[in-house]
Length: 494
Image 1 (cartoon, rainbow, N blue to C red):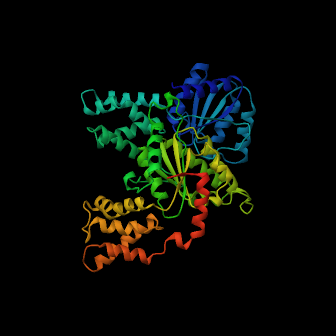
Image 2 (tube, rainbow, N blue to C red):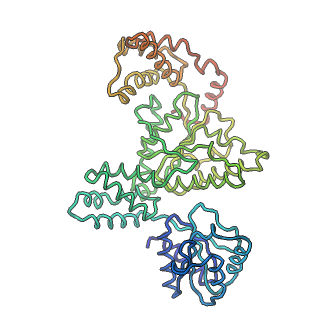
Image 3 (tube, rainbow, N blue to C red):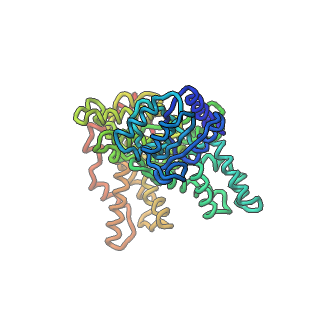
């Protein structure tokens, strides 16, 4: 039994000995919870019984939840009665009152309501609450070794499992034990001979197994070499990746918290967020604020709790919050929604500061005036970077990426150009004040013009497309200048 599981088991025994007679046990792994409760009962010398809506009493005698509660009231001897998914079977005021009166007792049977994490549980003040932690690395290593023994030592799969057990266990953290076993079995079936392919298959299947819920969605990271410029940010991410090394904790290095990217619209903040997952060698999920707020009382808060829970189960992972100022808008004085927005924002900020799993948050923002002061406190982010309009050198890098590198990745080869690179570079060098998005859009427009005339794209096409565009540095010059003044004292240059 691992340390976390042993601690929950010990608290259970102490509570039961002290006379607690009703406990809600939240878990993602029902079988593991039942194993722990059986072990607790053996140590106490108590009998155990189990009730489910489908199987009744001990899966042998049909019995409603009402009947089960009546039976518990009539038995004076101490025992553990496990109620599986009982919350959904409560039949109203009589059952709730019966459960409450049983919880008020200090002797006789102890009721343990085993519920899935995130499900709604009875709002009864006498109920104690516990949560079963997910298997830790040591327990998952043992699970991997058991799977290796099952496949046999004469197979290549055995070599991949036993030799890579620690790395595999790290990939499985956050999964229930039975789900971890299934994920490994599926990955082995798909890629039995290649350890590197096995790890990629494990990661993909873990994402599918955990599920993203309604607020988080999985996104493919962008290759970091598609990010033109931002050399300081790239170097910082490369160094920060060391915090996710298996030996980092033993060296006293805490989990990396994340980074806030503030800057001019269209200058690559979202791309940088996606590229950060590639730089850190981690999967990426995007936080979708549009799906966070619900219409019923408590729904928004519950959505946030589930999103944070999912993110921690996926850890190590990068969580991308795009335009975080829109998520946090209305956090002050939100009277029109009965304070829901303020509570959700407060919950998000608290989680960002106090999360205990390696969840790296990358947030982007265009408007610093809409960000609450609490966001800037150290502990929510490791650093704040300012993403400015690209310099001449960065414009050359961005143009080369969109002219040659991206088409080569998508098509296998870069389409021919009518002019040499130097001609395109001269256009990019002269395009001061244009954002990376402006350069990309101009190249798309230039290719369309050339394609319409059945010829290769020329530097003149690129120049004409740029001349027709109005860059943000001209259309919103005042706001860009204000953002740059803010960055002089409040952020590092990306």
